[in-house]
Image (cartoon, rainbow, N blue to C red; front, side):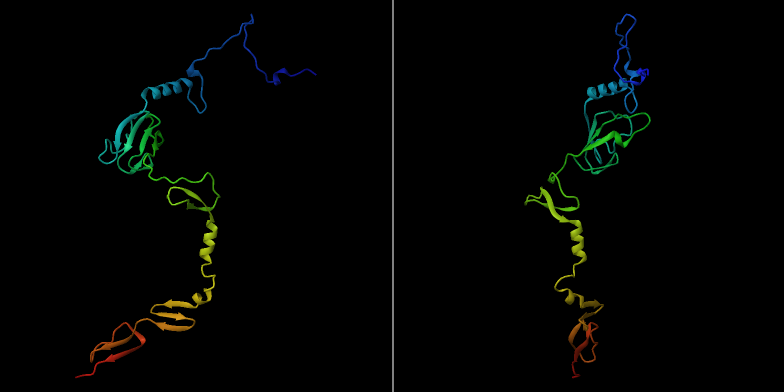
Length: 222
């Protein structure tokens, strides 16, 4: 049986008839990159980025250098400092944050993804553990307020405890108490709110907030 050489994979060199190695020449614009585009365009983009560097153009927000990010003509490396809290390039920002252009404006239109936000005003950031158990609640570790740890208490456990809040030694007593309007019932006995005793002038009005079982003393006529 004849061996199928074409089915085998192997490395090879391209030679001429005199056994000289031929090195095919290609230009950068002929080499396509993954995701589209060519090497030449990418090289030019990188050259521009390195040449331009980062340019701080001022502040953005109310009474800033600009109130909003430019809609066109921005360049890779353009950067603004947030002066007024707000939403820029669809990202919520706070004063002191940095907004950096990571892709120059293209004629087909601006995109929010042309910008990235670098949060630089973090105050008392909380540091967590290297790992934690899924579903566990967080607790502070120490009194600094900046270090967190796994509490070992699960969200499900807390929910269960709340659902069973009356399943304890006083459950029968608490379950025997109810209230409705101005009355409270304890183990079948009804108690009314309102004052139990009142003293009024002769011919005076009985207070409206009297307890149904209260006593009123009316002064005699002189």
